[in-house]
Image (cartoon, rainbow, N blue to C red; front, side, top):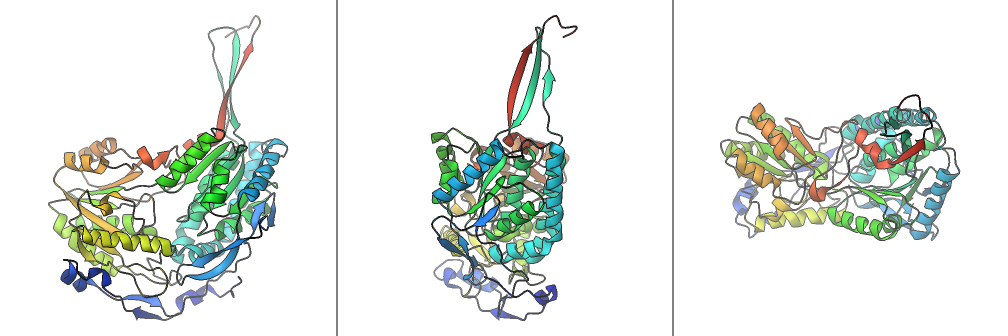
Length: 538
């Protein structure tokens, strides 16, 4: 579906109106009076702003060409601002995955990619990064249109992060090498680091292009070929940049992109006998299925980045104003649709009341609206399913006795907008404190001392990340070792530099992405031992 291209200035010129917000969730709840007192009006564009981009690629990318699905079926990808169709995208299934894997296998076994020097591969990846940078604004517009992300953030932060990431892995391509190690006898021993082969990759909808980069960057740098499935909610940006990668000189068949659904296309990748490596980002429940399918097929190696319920710990020495802003960003960033969001805000009892009141005020000031409008902090949730899930958890919080201090309802009657919502008096046993809501719902819990908060923060099946706000180095040193998570941010949150490994403990996954550790996902280790006759030295 083609949309007329407009100048970037048009993003700023549309009028807004105040959408009346109902209070249906509050009726019958004991928080009724207080909740009504904190409602405010949110502004949503009377007419959605026309995105400054056109949709050109909706087919599958197999063996270097855009092709229709074997079945001829398509599915709609929707604008979360309205629920209306943006475009119809080819729906891949088992037959298409077979075609894509066959192309990837041929490209690995017979093609030039793994046989190229690392220096040659790095040149292609560098050129790809340059093309992403050149088309930054168009890519950002697709990402916003398809997923509801604020355009300003996407254009200024997320897409440049992808560019930086690809340059990082381009730099690694010619620095991957093995070792020569000593043996106790007359033997020459080489340790080779070899590409695995065909990598199957399944990416989520919340950061489609960033996850695309996290997956293909190290895989390609190491000399592998790829079959990647996009999320059905947000397929457009990956198809667009895949075209750019081929413009940069990537040989046909090295990267194949199939749009489709998890039970069909995703399951076909996970269980395919000719896929050598599997990488999945998504929910823990789906991760278990993916791991089982991989084991039941050819026991392919699996890297998983799964769900989280990350603690954000505010100590009593914190500057409350700064802590409120940090905790707000930790939770509400990307509409709360972030696996490592600081969704359990633990606040020391000495500053708890002040923190709650200021968190309420900050939530009420959060700018929600059309993500293409300048100054908007929060767009719509990705789709109706996610919207309904969030509303269910808000009702659960009210019903379980938490105090609703801000938000709690939808915004307007069109699209999937949710008010920034804050609960206080949250208890550990409540669903909103235990389960991954994946939305703009902040749960604030009270604690007394360091020992208590460590125990409670770790009392979860997840272990993806944690945040801490403190000025006490002894407290920081204790927490950095005691928290059972893959990442701990001190006095910051959501720092995702290309060099920093990311992954979880416990049921938040296995393996790491980004940084030098991610290369290990895509390399095999081979020992080569050669007998020596009368060596001059050992």
